[in-house]
Image (cartoon, rainbow, N blue to C red; front, top):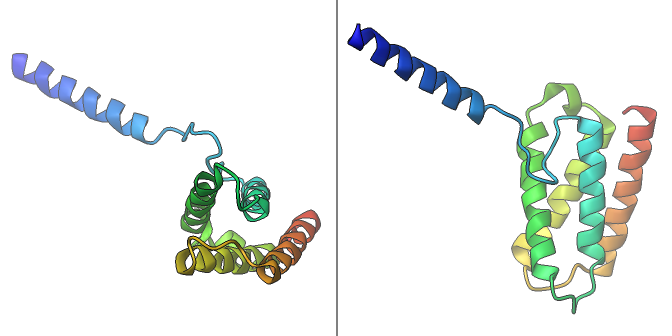
Length: 134
């Protein structure tokens, strides 16, 4: 009987730990799984990151958060076939890759105006495509 109870307790613990690990991520700003909402959130975050003044005290923190969001978004939606054919997805991926490339190559330099202008155009295309449902 004692052996049966110890196995049952072990099984219950494994199930509890497994369910806790599968629960929703409650961190603020985390991806929700709703592609449209997540895409709009990352567009707003990246706009803030590229428009922050060069002398801002929290510039490094905001850029680190932008890099993290880029990685999270790519990890979540890169292999999702339901969104990979959407025009909004291909456009946001282009913008993410451009900004991530700048942050990787020139971590201490501000984002050039030419890149800011291009990113803003891509963000507007993404928002437009999301309004159309693409």
